[in-house]
Every structure is written in C-alpha cells, then in structure tokens.
Image (cartoon, rainbow over all chains, first blue to last red; front, side):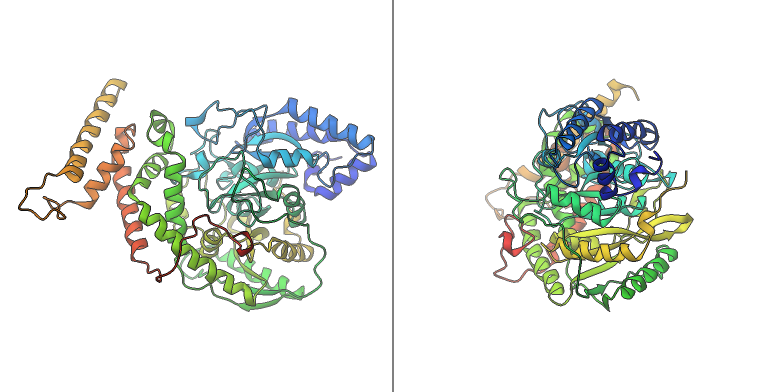
Length: 464
Length: 103
C-alpha cells in the first residue's frame, strides 16, 4: 500500500483491500492519523486528532470483519468530521476562539450513524469560525488558522468546511463530513479539487451539529468521487426525531442510470470578471456531458430574489443562534472584526422582515421546482475563480456571493454536487455544480457519476 | 492602547449609544403632538446603530468603523428586502421544508 496514494483510491477499493486482507482498518487508521498529524497540520486542517477513539473503532471494525460481521461499504474506513459536529473524546470548538475548550459528551447523529456503518472517526477538522456566521473578511477567521490548500499552501482551502476539503483534496482521508449553509461544501470542494455533496435540506439530521441557520444548514460529504459521497450519504440520511427538519426520507445509493438525462445549462457571464480558463473548462465539461448522451439545453432560473432572501435568513437566524455570544463578553474573542460586527448588526432586521423573507422563500421554492418539471438537472460552474490567495480580502474575492445557482440552491434547499472539472488560473482546480430537484439527490448523483465515468479530473491529486 | 483605556473607550462608546437609543425609543411626546409621530425626526441609521450597540455591549471600541459599515449595509439589505413584493395570500414557510413530501 502506497501511503501517498492509498486514500485517493476510493471507498470501494479500500473496502476490497480490507476484505481481502491486503490491509486492516487499524493500518488505514494509523496511516490517516500520521498523514493528518504531519501534512494535515501544515495545512491547518486538523482541529483535534482522536487517536484513542480511532484505534479503538478500527480494532472493533477488524474484529467484526474477521468474525463475518460486515456493516457495509464504510466498514473500517477512516474519516474526519468538521468541528461543528459533537463527538465524544475531543473538544467541539466550532472553529471559534469564543468556544475554545467546549466539549459535548455525546455524538452528533451523523457521527453515530457513521459509527453504526463501521466508519472510523480519526479527527475533528478545522473550519471557519462559527461556519462563517456574520461574515468574515479573511481566511484567518478560525481558531485553527487560515485553512491552506493542498494544491498550493499559499492559497485558501475555501470555507467554511476548510479542513474537510483540504484533507480529502490532499489524500489524507478518503472522505470527510462538512456542512453548508451557503457555499461551505461547494466552495472547498471546488477549491481543493474534490467532490462535495450538499444533500436536500432535511435529508440529513443536524442533531448534535452547531446551528448557524436552522432553515439553511445541511450536512454532507466531501469525497474522492460522486460514488463515494453517495455511499456516505446513504449511511447518514434519514429522519431523526430530535431534528424536526429531517423529514426527507432515507436515501438509496442509486443504481446505474439507464436513460438520457435532460440537463439545463446556466451560463455565468465571464466577460467582465472571472477566470477565463474556468469558462473554457466549463465548456469542455458540457461537451463531455453531451458525449455521454445527456441532453443539454440552455436554461434560466426564474427572476426571483434568492440571494436577498437567503441573506436575510442567515443573518437573522445567525443573530438568534449566537445571541448568547453576541450579548456577552465572548464576542470580543472572535478574531475577525467583520464577523463580530456582522453578527451584531443582524439586530437591525425585525420579525416582520423574517416573515417577509419566509413568504418570498415560498415563491422561490415554487419557482425553482417549476424548472425541474422540464429538466432533470441544472449545471453551472461551482465558482468563477480558483482558490483565493491565503491573505486575500474575501469581501472582494466573493463579491458575487458565489453565483446565482448557489444562492438559489441554498435558498430553496435543493441538492447539489460540486465535481472537479479541470483547472483554472495557476493550474488550480475548479468545479462543476450539478443540482437537481428537492428530494431528488439520486439524480444529481447519477449525473455526476456519468460525468466522472467520462472524465479523470476527480482522480487527480496535488503534486508532491 | 492598554486594557484600562480600552475599557474606558468601550464604556464611553456604550454610553453614547444608550443616549442615542433613549432618543430613538423614549422621546417624550406632548399632548399637542400627534402620538404616532416621533417628537424628533430620527435618523434611522443612528437609531439602528444604537440598538445594535446596546445589544452587543462588548464589541471592542476599535470595531466602530466596521460596525457602522455593517449597519449601513444591513439597512440597505433590509430596504431591498422590504421593497420585494409578495402576493396576498402567500403564507410563510413557518417550518421550512424543501420538498412538498416533507410538509
């Protein structure tokens, strides 16, 4: 087993190695812990290593496999969890100086489900402070330091699931759990050259996860391929009575697609801004999709205020979620002035504004659902730029808020994958966004798998 | 700036805010005045800034400039949001569900 490439192989290959005795879960786990401690630390990707718990879970996985008990495709596979998920055995600091040393002696629902599936938790992974609630100006807005990109350490890994993107992108773990309120899976997936799967809102319970925005937060996987991300989703999806939003039914890893999918193409305007190499990569990705038999047509989203609505909701809900921090002395501990003042300024909105936004949201949801009556999926570039310099002012770099499909997708809770589609400026990765109707995560996964069967971008790794 | 002067600045900052908030919220009205009209023409920005400061009393004094920018930007977002029309009869998604099946 080559330690540099082991975790680039994909979950089914690792599973085969475990079942044929080529390796053991303990060996894979020791490798993951070593890689995280050395390369992961250099990327500021690790919040807390969990060696004792990891080895104990790995030993159990090995014992069970030997005894003929197989928990499925994730059995014995090491992974990491964004540090907004509670887990026994390590602090859960939410990336925030205001929550240094915070511990929960319970596992988040997702961590419990992954344990049930036999996966091995090796580390809590770094994140932007409070998942970026209130906004932030610099990548350094994290108790772990700025999340560095495995493709170029002087670039940002993206946020807020920085450690999840960097560890999977750098081949330090086969998969990681991240979260997205608005862009926090798609952005690190695109910047780090990995596949990110943001499920339908309500598909995965957030029990035991930090709340930034109760009506926008989603948990999902960052992995080496759409197939791997889907295997993880199948393990963590399904209702949980302790999260009333988790009402979307269980997810089944889809079988092979047998009919041509109708795909709407959303074109971004690269004439005034954005990376022209990403535009070229997007056009090449469309050709690759068309060659698989997908039926492409230009599409438009109804002209609705997705960004204004999602922006108001995340501001108001974030103001409420962090009320005790904002009104107390710990606010001053947050190290990014924009985050401190952004959280505080949420007070400007009123209850009437919140309900107005929720009424507009109903309109947005119906509008986007209408698009999917004629189309199976929508595609767009994940972002118009590659990873930003590590010290860039993110107000400037993300002036467009990440594009229309990100705003609409998060506002309406539809599923999305970001899959690698080539390279932009400086040979840095860029991503293709694939979205489907709310609840139809399987179609988005199928299209992403078809694309990855026809391309090799997702198999690339940063040069050593 | 040392700790003591930071604390003093912070207190002065909060006092100014409280004064502005008092003006905004408790301006006395005489019997001759229309009770639904404020006694003094209020500056929406000043009132909002005061409200924010009163509810975040531990913001470092050095955040003043950032805070003013954030309040202005949030008020702009609020204005844009309120300008968006919602047809009569549209109910809010009280508990948001992305799918009809989940409702």
